Length: 360
Image (cartoon, rainbow, N blue to C red; front, top):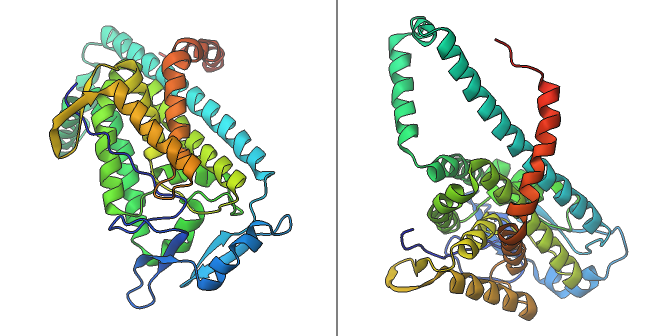
């Protein structure tokens, strides 16, 4: 595997500016003049009343309005942790069930295509006669391009496209309140569960999305080659939600509400898996290719920095989310892939019976 970068970033508990300068207790805001999204700090009154809001009565959420965008802050109800935990467990289980069905349907589809080709040699040619020539050429070009991609690039491409689309939605001022509500994870908000998942595809800063997508592209090839695309997707989605849950727990315990978004929790799961699976692989830092180090040492250093960030209360990144994603990646490398993933065979058997025999 070539030399790779190990740059990971997930914003939180505050969203950071595109210049990537860290600020404490910031939230997304919309500029009144050019209606562009920008980053603004909480007002002086909000900062002075932070301790009061943190110990507010139960069921109290204090919305803070910053230049037109309402960000729910203040008291974090500890009972919401159970909602987050149940959602995390249900979503992770559903993700692996979904990719298991995808794997089954792919194998079934290939088997049926092979059977049909034996029954009728001209079946494919007869079908193509009814299509327009220009559409057929376009499809061939697209198929040719797709076939040239590596397995890792084929799973990376749609993930990257989703992240780019969500990044573009952040650029639309009228969608700012919706993006803050559903695409930024916040344990103090009324909507808790689905933002835990949607925020893993959400980036506000251009540097943020470029860095995360670069790292994902670098490690996706090795991960997909080892796990397969279905298992890779299950690990990626589950690691993202588990990272959000870890962030929720940390913010609830420390009583520090704030927004978090970014794919780095999910990416940390993949990075931790690859670095643990191939600890002797040599990595390098972007723009400093002359300095190399082992993957095993890299993941230890990265997790050590995030652990220090959690213990010392650093607010540059969402260090709790990083740790949550990385710990799941380590779990999957040493236990999940060998003991949890094979359990899908029981569910696939029930699904096969439900689907019935294939139609000829």
